Image 1 (cartoon, one colour):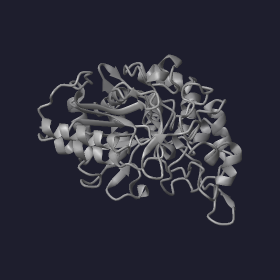
Image 2 (tube, helix red, strand yellow; image 1 turned 135 degrees about the vertical axis):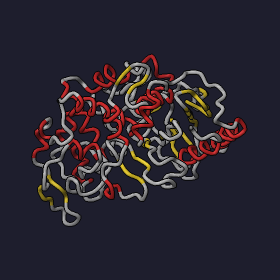
Image 3 (tube, one colour; image 1 turned 90 degrees about the vertical axis):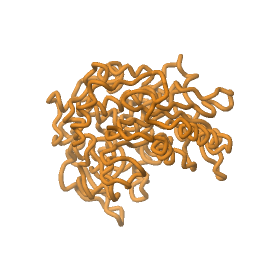
Image 4 (cartoon, rainbow, N blue to C red; image 1 turned 180 degrees about the horizontal axis):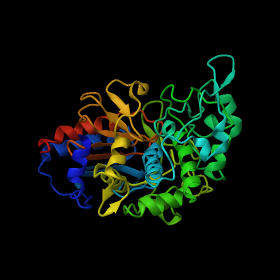
Length: 414
């Protein structure tokens, strides 16, 4: 059913750069969102944020609040550049599925076809530090759905083994590679020597899965991951402010990372992997397909509009509608373990109305460790992007934002 919705709007929808009053939204209810966001800044629960809502590909709401850099007194702007962390996963998953469409990868392929070190992996048992051989090889499908049994190595039972390999607790919050002076495939080959925390296909385990896929993109295409993403995805979609590492000339557009202190107030995060990161001056060699991309609300909304349109935007065809349907439909059932929600090839999906607020059945989305989040509603033809860089985050603004949007939407899509 969702495929029909997607195809029906594919020719018409494109992202407009100019906000205009949208008849589907009550103006006074949109003003409530302004106040809602500003209250979080005024109470010092967040440093700053950008919100963007599209309907039918046109801007229905856009707001920037707070500071991009409080110390430098640089206000937040709509074109500010954010570390999007796990929002990178949808882009890398798209790259994999482009190669699937070209016949260079099969969903059922063992990862060892591209990274031989994965031919024989091991799993840590819950007690005694004993490992056993994996019952089968890990596949591309396992990685796309986070059912390979691979965590971020911060689990108590494996953390002591991951740290000496510069992974897990030694990699920022576990997922961070921007400070590593090595290619991503070198990092991933080292990961393959470590024990994982569950058997392949046994359960949903969130971890380095999409970083492994980034290496697979390089091996299957013969092109570095950053170049593949740039040439095949971001340039065709005119995502001009999306990179793995920000150009030096754009450093003043990169948002400062805040953190919630013990009182719940936003303060500047420290330098280094657990704070400001190395996204401008770092080695610029280790491209994390799972957590390493920087982008703007506008750019990421263009990417999501492409997915909503069935794989194309403004004449640029990235994926086929059938492939998009695989990405956005649940592929793992009860393994995801959250009632009414599922997980496809890169996105969480809403399977029951009410399982995720007011989002329609068929909606899909995810978020990032710096507290950014996004959602696409094919029923209402909505794209919602909420960008913020605050880690750790105690404020609940990102979770409340979609409810505020739906509460302002007073005309259902026909």
